[in-house]
Image 1 (cartoon, rainbow, N blue to C red):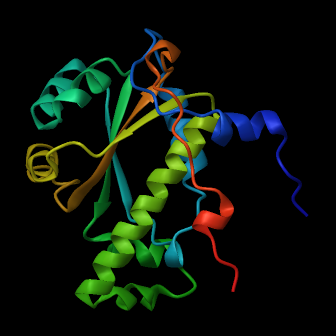
Image 2: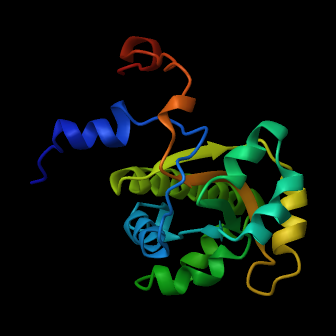
Length: 200
C-alpha cells in the first residue's frame, strides 16, 4: 500500500509551488530535463496512447525563432528561461498504439472517428503536460506555463517542414528553470471543496 508523501514534498509540488514569471541566471543541465521527462512519462493516459510530443527550446536561435509568435508579456519569460518546451500532440498518435498497448494492438482502431481521435489526443496530451510540470517541480524546478502564443504560427514555423514533427500540433508552452521569487505575484485564491465539488 502506498503511503502519503510528507508535507515538504506536498508543499514543493502543490501548496507552495508558484508559476514563475522570471528566472534566476542558473543553468539547467540537459540531464535534468531528460530526468523530468523520464519521470513524467509514467503518468496515465487512455489506453496508454501517450499522444504528447515535446519540442525543447534551449538555444538562442530557437528562442528568437519562437519570439515572434509569443504574446508580448510572454517574450521575456521565454527569452530568459533556461528551457522552454512546446507541448504538442501528435495527429498520428495511433501509429504508436501497437507499441504502447501491445496486449491489444487493434486498439489503434478505437480512434478512427475524427471527433474521438481529437478528443483523445488533446485531452491526454494536456494531461501529459500537467504530469511534466509536476515532475519538474518534484525534481526541484519551477514552471512557467503559458497559452499566450500564435499556435498556427508556431506549428508552421517549427513543425510543418520537419519530417519527425510534421504531424505535431501545439497545445501550450511551458518555461522551466529556477524562478525569481521577487517577480512573483501575490498568490491568487482557490475554490474550496464545497464551491467546486459535489458528492453524489
